[in-house]
Length: 247
Image (tube, rainbow, N blue to C red; front, side, top):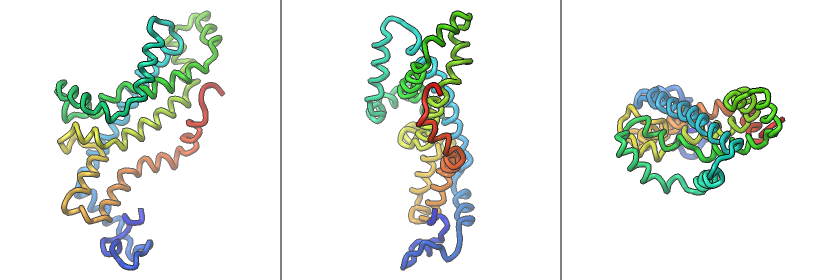
């Protein structure tokens, strides 16, 4: 943050001073916005983060509900496979994911960036554990009153597991907002790049490689939404990790 307010001369001045001799943040920000299509990077990132979160919550909630309340053949085996996925490093499946995306003809698209993350083992596990804290008597009473599974999920289940949903939402948004390696691997066009990839490309350019004031200003631009969200929703963020299940 301090460096983004400095001029190039202030950054390399000896002795080093925390306070800039002249505030250059506005000029640095103007130059950063001129050199790269940040609005496009923001749009791509927001689309991926929001669309992926909605799909993850829908898929994972339905799967977790089935694991928590349904009895079916192979249930324990399937859930064991979900737990096994948690033990596999994401980096170890980059190559098969890349080959799959390439064979599907989805390279250099926003779909390619988000598709491998649609099914989240962490979300299924987290939401299932929250569902298991709902007393089974509540579910049985709802069934006796003629409440079907989808209605029970909508009217009773989801309101009771809001902390778990919020917890995963935070994890998913922060992870996808900061994701760099996979988006870099499957995208080539500037129009498809996300914020971290755009920031890396900005920092590697010859004209900005040693211009640390501009590079730090661009970095601040990328992380600002997450910082602002944390400042506004700090209490909810902390509570989401402390609370689970029923009050």
